[in-house]
Figure: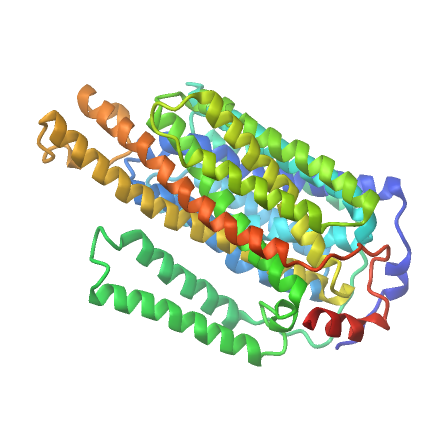
Length: 526
């Protein structure tokens, strides 16, 4: 381990007021990063329609930013262990702002997907760095209290995002491009606030090694598999040389990545941390929660607009129950965890509630009662609010301060990875179901599929003739239930992982006591 400096400074706790001042800037940054993804979710059917994109491109606009965010998250987490956390945060704010403006100027879906990938780099950095900085300032037991604020900001961003996105997309003198431009003023204010208030000790290490090879191999392996998932069944068969090349190549790259991670001094995904029982189970649960949540919420906006014919603003309003669930459950559970010091009961309850919510959503079609959908979304939101942030807390509680960045990076990495896989897999399932539904609908109505492009070549529903428009709407509405059934099956994995978590009490100190590290390794090995 390299030489540490500034340890004495770090041991000095910040006052509640200092923490709140710094936290205001951090929360604003997190708000901007989160709102940028939720603001687009509701406007996306209109954006892809305006740029004449397809269902696969719809999925990739989301997947590109998630994938870039996922691949870069562990690197940012590792850099936070090596360099000035404040400087890294400022750099990531600039990356994020510039790429958001570029997205707003995109002229076609290919450009938008490319700029979203760069935006993902900034989003990944902001999300992990905010968590690492908060963890470096506040002890785990106290953090539950501040996690309430964190959960609140996440919930407000998640509620306000779709509403704002819908309003902007529906306002004639703004238009969808402003869904990207709107991030600029927020980021400027956040940058200024943090420059003034954030004081985090710089802990420099001499043995600076960053595992770029591991990060590139992981990103490449996951990308190849996701591209295969997008095209299999449409462009080529499940049993074909393309499948063998892509699926085999992806698995090979990931196997190579695992080998690299076991050899390098500073791995992107530290195998020694994720081999321990609590981190391993928390990561598995996060993967499931991420896959179910991202995958589910991304397609709800599309369901309301394309499947039910609502405007972007109405679709934003209809997703409020889910966001309310996140807001209430994350705030309440955060405070109760701080009081009791126990985290496992909330994670288990959250993952069960999430699964039940998805099971109810799996029954929907293009005529389901909106009340039933609202109740199911409230359950999904409550499940996410109780489990997501608390899984990070469970991991942070089991590692010493010097491994905090790597551990936080690892869990955020796997959660985002789950989300990326979820969006891609569910998008592919949806595209196939919709194509089948449209073909059946056209055949039933006696309309030849040729000349309509099967209805699936474009998401510009308004451009379609009336009878075909109704067939496409029904196909989207009916196909959505199937993807939530897949989400429910994935969420069950999260429940099982949560049940096997070791019940622990949250510690009061920022760092692990020096003597307990060896004991910790022994305890978590069992």
